[in-house]
Amino acid sequence: LQRSTRKTIGVIGGGIVGISCALFLQRSGHVVEVIDYAGPGEGASSGNAGIIALSEVVPLSTMSTLAQLPSLLLSKTSPLRVRASYLPRAAPWLLRFVLACREKRLRAIETALNGLLSNSWASWTEIVRGTDGEHLLSRAGWLQVFETAASLARRQTTINRKRRFGILIEEVGPAEIRQLEPALAPRFAGGLYYPKNGLVHDPLKMVQALAESFVATGGAYHRERVMTIDPAQENQVKIQTDTARRNYDAIVVAAGAWSRSLVRALGYDMPLDTERGYHLMLEKPRATITRSVNFPDHGFSLTPIGDAIRLTSGLEFAGLNAHPDFRRIQRLTRHASQMIPELVAVSTSQWLGFRPSFPDSLPVIGALRDHPGVVVAFGHGHLGLTAGPFTGSLVASIMGGVPLPIDMSPFSPDRWR
Ligand SMILES: Cc1cc2nc3c(=O)[nH]c(=O)nc-3n(C[C@H](O)[C@H](O)[C@H](O)COP(=O)(O)OP(=O)(O)OC[C@H]3O[C@@H](n4cnc5c(N)ncnc54)[C@H](O)[C@@H]3O)c2cc1C
Image 1 (cartoon, rainbow, N blue to C red):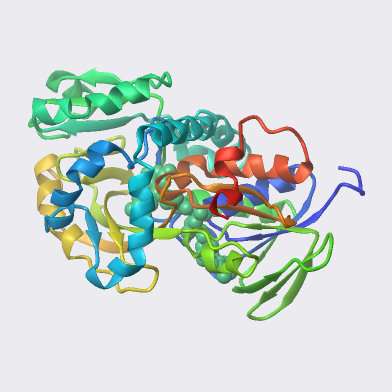
Image 2 (spheres, rainbow, N blue to C red):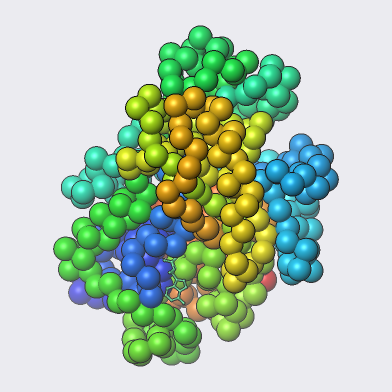
């Protein structure tokens, strides 16, 4: 970059989204600093299921989810939970979620998600190149298995909606499931195999590897908490952290589920909430699975992560501060050992994470209209690991003023003004 176009840019948040923005901005020639009070990837980006879920163009907000909502909310074993004390806070978000289920809106959301996801694999392979993260990424595929033919048949509408976007889905029978994952119990009537989906074999290590590459190439990582953002002066954004004042030509807000309060003072009160999710780590058995397997009948997934099996589940509305409640996910361990007979269902560690979620399932990516030096990149919900790197490349294009490869209007922060 020429001296005149090179910017000094501060990125708030060192999760997969923030680190991806930092790396792509750095590779475009800017001087970049990341600010996060925690280490790289220690937020939601550490404990997820690791799936590069390119196939998930259909959001949760569908009529079929709505139809199931009453039973999901009342059941004590369902992954969905709204804590009673949080219901008044969650109600406006939930109402918007219901509105997002209307067919016309749903179609627009699917098209927007497809724009993000269909570009995400290329950005993943680009971002890991030359870093220690390269060996942590693979195109492992993703498997969903169903206990009955009826429960598989209930997926047909979703399958059809995905296929409209050219998503490759193979319907597999018991014999093919055994071939794909011999360690699974022979109890499934059928499954869906997504050969194009990928896997990050250790999400925390991946973000750490990307951050190491960023720092090794001259990037700075400040362990500080951002308190306020002040874009008052033209071409300058001031940041006050708990220990320092910092000045940048431009900033990126990528603080995941914690981003809402950071941009509120800039005139944006966005309906960002958190869908809390849990995981348990289980000892890896000798006969094990090789890719992430999802069990929709029981509401959880099992994924080989590092040298363990990670059980992920949960979609809990209780805000950012309520204590974790591990009872529901602990109850699932019994089911987990029914899925993989050799699995010893005793957890070695447990984790609660905060998905940054908008009710329409779309992140905000773009500059704030009144403050062009402030670019936002948060709210990726269930798909942040998948879409983080492509988001980083979009943010680098926005900062560089170059044409963008997809229609950005669905991701505009102004949709919440
Ligand atoms: C159980 C579970 C399973 C999941 N599975 C998948 C999956 O398989 N595939 C997928 O694509 N996605 C998955 N996700 C979603 C994915 O993990 C998230 O969308 C993604 O990690 C969000 O990344 P982020 O960088 O926006 O946020 P985070 O990783 O949370 O990063 C935000 C960072 O901002 C920092 N921060 C916050 N406030 C401040 C401040 N004031 N000053 C400085 N720093 C600040 C935090 O410390 C944090 O490090 C899953 C999520 C959960 C909970």
